[in-house]
Image 1 (spheres, rainbow, N blue to C red):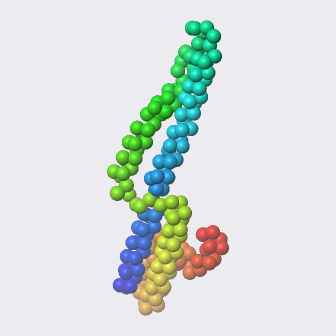
Image 2: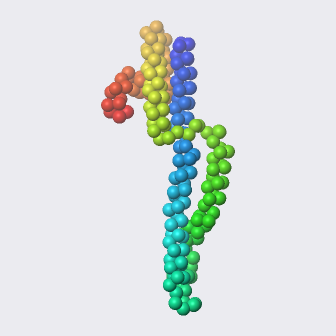
Image 3: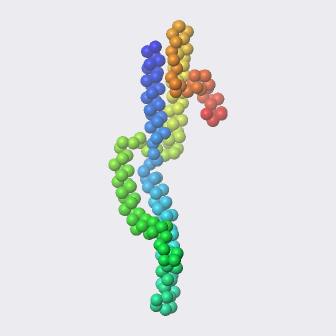
Length: 176
């Protein structure tokens, strides 16, 4: 019985490790690069509007003929939300990124270590295999206790593949 308790404690610890891996975010640098790329895409409409306005300015032959509304793509004098957001992000984007990086640095110590997608997949696969091996060992102990006349309840979250003794190779073959 004490062997089962030891195995269950090890399963709980390994399950916690697996949860940490599954919840780990991507490395902050990769996220910041992705965010910068997203900000750049959002700013494209503002950049196009400024380029259009510059072209208008350079090609005007009469003072006062310049149409800022037309050049910026503004409808009937209404400033579009897309233009305003793009302009705000173009000029405030660096400050937003700086604030985000500071918040990431503050929060990072309390979160699981960041992992790339490849690291997460590799670590999770290893932990799942270890966990399944421990659960198979637990099942063997439960059956041994049953042979001794002691009925031990299985954990509600026991892996059915481990309880049924399905080999890892068969699980891998079916993508489980």
